[in-house]
Length: 363
Ligand SMILES: *[C@@H]1O[C@H](CO)[C@@H](O)[C@H](O)[C@H]1NC(C)=O
Ligand SMILES: *[C@@H]1O[C@H](CO)[C@@H](O)[C@H](O)[C@H]1NC(C)=O
Ligand SMILES: *[C@@H]1O[C@H](CO)[C@@H](O)[C@H](O)[C@H]1NC(C)=O
Image (cartoon, rainbow, N blue to C red):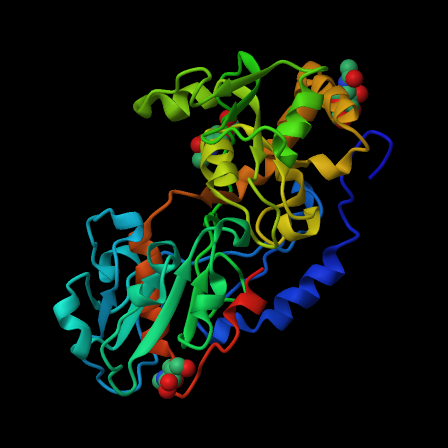
């Protein structure tokens, strides 16, 4: 970064382009696209675009495949939700997605949500596995908050998580390209920095960083034991702020959650991120869409930079330029995740595949 705390803009691009090519995930399902910003809008930037709303009509389905049955072994965190049709959500052929365990023998695949089974191996299906049935390990939590991963070794055929090297990639959010450039509207700003914290754990990295930051900067904290944030007022409250502290609860590659996508981008606040390195974020979003705490030698320097941006409207607005050509999608939806699984199963030929040491991979 330069002395003003600007992130490096051009340095990582070659690496990123390489990584994007190497991902090879397009073969698995949605294709990744690299797109370039128009020269007048800034430096060209590779961004992972994901997934197109309307996929090609002509899907390379093997046969006139009959509807696949996908059994949700549990509702995630035990909470039922409305299963929407994948044809409506993603424009793909429908799967029969159900949480009715009597369908076990008929199911082409079962999705097992880690948190709901990790307390004991007995919580996994105990009946013999039908031939060719695929078990999908599903987890959106970080390794730090995913206990007993070792119990999952040698049971599963496919992985499904926010990690981009999962068989079924289910990130918390993504950028969608606009068909033509849009005028940017920035919500009216009357406040500086907000943070919503649901679980306040003293001594954690993010709380320590905040304790330091607050010496130099007023941060309004919402959540339990803090300012109230009523359900329907989420976006209208956060959008009054220029910045949002998108501090992840633990730091792991690709673990970039709704804190950035929903609380910051969707609300129209600039995210100040604490999480994996800047390079990792830049696979998901343009470099000038966020501020990374690692760009600064100390919390004090970050505070100084945010005050500078607060005083200089032109400079602050530069964090919105990307919005003329990209739209963030960050509404959390179990239904979309499961439809991605449906799509992946339709595309992926059945072949022997097993995940031997899940606990070694997911960390
Ligand atoms: C964007 O702003 C320009 C100038 O104010 C206006 O002419 C144009 O119609 C706007 N475009 C859209 C898509 O709103
Ligand atoms: C505000 O920022 C812009 C762009 O970084 C810069 O050109 C300009 O000189 C700054 N204005 C002031 C008053 O510092
Ligand atoms: C799925 O994994 C299990 C456990 O390793 C294995 O027994 C089974 O043959 C695999 N099935 C497929 C279709 O790969």
